[in-house]
Amino acid sequence: KLATAAAQCSDSCPTSSFPDNAKACHPCAVGCATCGADGICTDCLVFHASYQGQCVFVFAVGFVIVVAVALAMFSAGVMRFMCLSLTSPRNAKVLKEALEHRRRTKVRDFSLAGNPVYDFDETNPRRQNIAGVAYMLYFRYIAFLAAFFVLILLGLGALRYLPHVLDDAKMEVGTVSVLGSVYGLCLLATLRWVWTQHVVAKEDVEDDPHMRNF
Image (tube, rainbow, N blue to C red; front, side, top):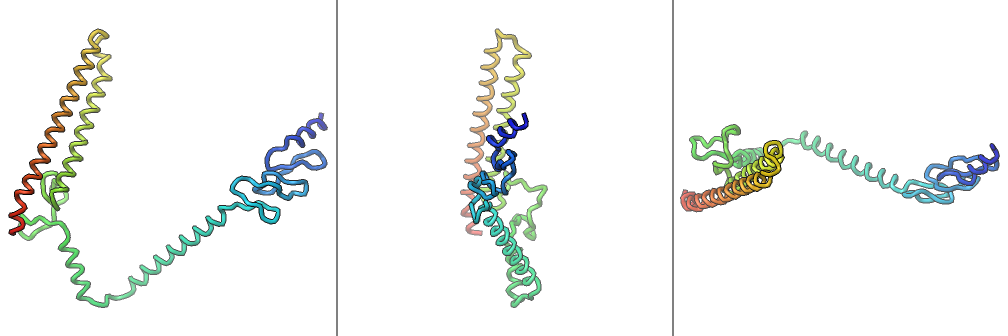
């Protein structure tokens, strides 16, 4: 029985192993799919290349190169920032003008005295023209999408709840009523959104000559 088992093992040795003279399976070197009795690879696994009787992982070299380049670039960036932090400004007036320009480029409320920066908690980008009408239209569009999906979710919830309220005879009428109501509300929301976008754009165009004169 042992001899039969050993013979079967030698005939069906798994991948990356080879039988010896004693009819036993031994593992091949790392990366070998098949190898001879002397342990030399005759076929390599996928992503491995044969080199001097051994199977070398092909992507190992590329991975090492990528890691080395990334570390070198990171080290160079850190050294650059360290060197810049140790240097002094060559032209203090230019630095002062740059800081003043950065202060002026911040969005400010010109309708108030002193032109303060817009308050974060009290500013409504859907109703206040902060930096152009495009931002107002964009945030109004986001609000419209949120309301639109809320209406759809309410309709889906109502459809799911209908079988617990209506019997089979009234189920079809209830489903049609819910779908019609959701469709009507979505249509009204869309028309209102289109109208408000039109009003905002029209007001911006009407105010543009006054701002140009200002």
